[in-house]
Image (tube, rainbow, N blue to C red):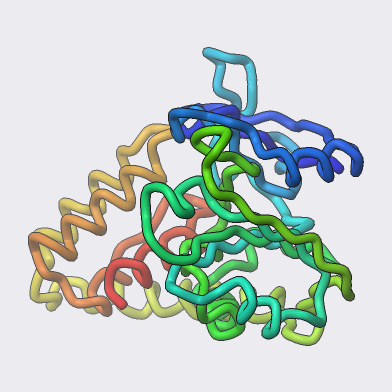
Length: 273
């Protein structure tokens, strides 16, 4: 199995890694022991884009959502009180690997576990626009909604000490498929709609109640340097939401950096809904 590895939570780079079935079976049954959660390795079961942005300090691909192209497995986190037994009843039809999280039984109460669903067809991260994300949230209504962001890192099986509580399960079934959902078509339609919605509103820009703040926000976004665009865009949108209290419709006056329409829309949904 090939996957993307982020060595620890503060890593700025990622790389490909491989693990055969026997090694994975051993790992899920014998989780890594990491006294500090920040030192635990994280994974995305997917593939990079063809020409990823490089972190030249380490000569490795930068650990950014834009560098992740597609997913071969969907990872979800469950921490809202849903029990393992109830989760298994809901998804007993599918193949998955389940293991309790680092915080389970030690740092936080209740059921906390992570689940990996191998996919029948790959899922491109560019398809994870708000309507697609909403479909996934409805299907996995017990899961953390951040699981359906463009690039969701998940800690590999890991515990804080040798005697920390831990449970795992490897469930056989059919592979999860979204072929009937047409996520690609939903993403294309959404991106086209978002583009024209902004174009139409540009003509009425001067009448926007917060035109000055939006103009300043656009300048900051336009001047963001490569490698900081995602973070800058989110900070600007959060400022508009928290401090200026701009309405959701107004932020569509802004034009995100090239090829970042999807991330822009996802940030708006996260902050305004």
